[in-house]
Amino acid sequence: MTKKEKLQNAARIAIVVVLIALSIYLFTIRDRIQYLEVYGYPGIFVISLLANATVIVPLPGVLITSAMGAVFNPFWVAVAAGTGAAIGELSGYLAGFSGRVLIQRVSKYEKLILWMKKYGGVAIFLLAFIPNPAFDMAGITAGSLKVPVTRFLFWCLLGKFLKMLLFAYGGATILEMLPFQ
Image (tube, rainbow, N blue to C red; front, side):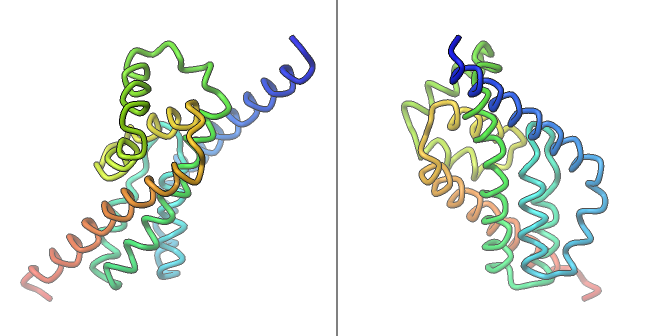
């Protein structure tokens, strides 16, 4: 193994360790993250970013988006939450980009690779749009396949924005339907 390969492997391991540590930290403070909502749209952005920056361990960002859609303008809530979510998903992308050797032997991962190769950006969009805690696998797959980060972010942002738009307007609609308003 060359010196360059050793350095690359060390960097990959370091990135994976940092992402795992970040995920554990965010999971331990998950009950305190909601207090960022007092900061309005920037707070919603940060909450969504943190909720999506965890790898494998999901945090309930869409629930906060629904609640904030009832308080603030749902469209701008979706913009803040969708942008934060897409940027937060870079953690999964980086995990795949740096540590693809770690997950190459998982059968569902193999199927996701084939699906991502066949459908590309549309696959990223659909997986980002559908509420599921497994989107990290899509980010990891995109990273391991070396999908350009701008392409990954574009499709992820589009899917996350539309998903957050539905949740924000859903929260606003539910509030309007309550009798004690």
